Image (tube, rainbow over all chains, first blue to last red; front, top):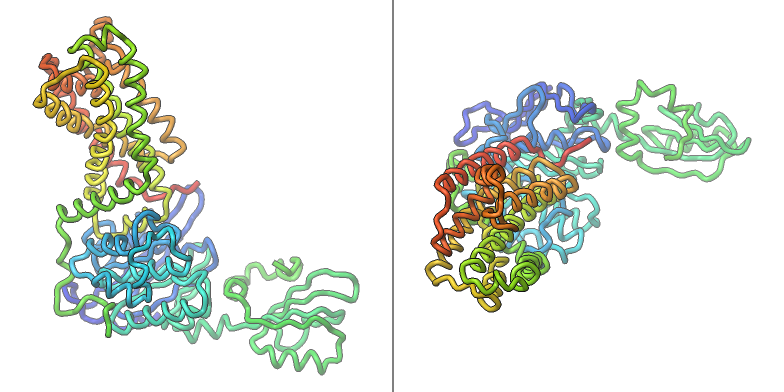
Length: 321
Length: 267
């Protein structure tokens, strides 16, 4: 795996990665959340961490932020153990939006968090930057979901961090709010910041990340440039009802049949080129109805990426999730 | 304009940290703001000890009319108010906080456990004192208790010192257990300790074996020290030592529980 540039960082010897996770295993009781995971993030990288729910993404972030201790292996933040409070000065993180203390005002939450850092962005400037300057005097309990999200991301940047961990930064936001947050994240990155973000949205990672790490069932399944990963997951899903062997059309890389009444089987077909597949479908002369095309969701794409072991089950399973 | 961005490379950000005193003040201030904006939490601390005064002290003529006995009763109930507020606020409050999603975020900030714990302790003292105010007022208005202003001040100061080990115990319980488990554990700790410490019955009524056990408890040590402050009746000789010992033990428990805690427990 190519490590991208590691710029000189003040106070840190050259070549020390911003985040260094080495052979880390973390268990909760019988459940292995992470198994022998290694991940190195250099200065100025913008890394997207992808994976279905329960894949271990949040556990990984909790180790990097010093919240948890690995059962085996080491975690370093700019060369130091993140369990030490002082090692976390260059770290920014988003709280979960639901977790803001409801009785504190927006301005107070930003002040409170910001004053933990030796060098901080002024509260007014930060709120303006995120378009929530007019909410400064409101209690956080009265904010909308989108406003809380913006505040959460703003909080991660208040201490001028070298690296930010963004856990699902735009989940539940409308398009406009999402664009605004992306702009802020890009601006931070352009200023030399390092970003490690998790997301369910392929689109979000596509917009922001240069490098993508795919985590599934506690292991790193892929770690590559965005282009390489996208080539693997950019499948389209075509749903169609019909009676022929539609799953044998050329271009179908994976298919599921859902049993229906005879002559009306529901097919879910995955293909890299939906246009070509539809052309094949029409010219094949097979009877069909209810044609539906959309991008494969990230989770579906993951099944494709990490699913070889489950291949036999895929055909038998009743398609609709 | 670029207000957000990584730390300027000209400064050595890796070395700079905010001093512990400023962090402690920060946590103290915002914890206070958070709590004081929930009026029922503040009122709860006021009402219970006041009711206890009306039920257990004021109606007993022989206690209420005796200046020393009623002063001791007020001191004991004030201490009970403080123990109860400390154990419940912390044992339960910390356990509940740990289930809030903001808690792991706070733990990722560059501050160790000390600022938050000290903030909690001082806040606990402040809110406990709110609970003492009605007890003292009722004692003054409805009983013969009449400590001098100096004695009253000394009593309040001693109460605050005595509150420290109970707050630490509460924190230790709060970081060790879930909110559901913390509640019964706090009750199981509080009431026997309060009884054995002579907060409900004067220890003069205890048989000698119980008195021996009593003198080893933090509640008894605390009670005698508060009584000494308000009435001049000397506490037993080891009282400060017992209190100090428990303080050290509970501080160790609280620190251990905090370090061991990794936020919410799974499975």
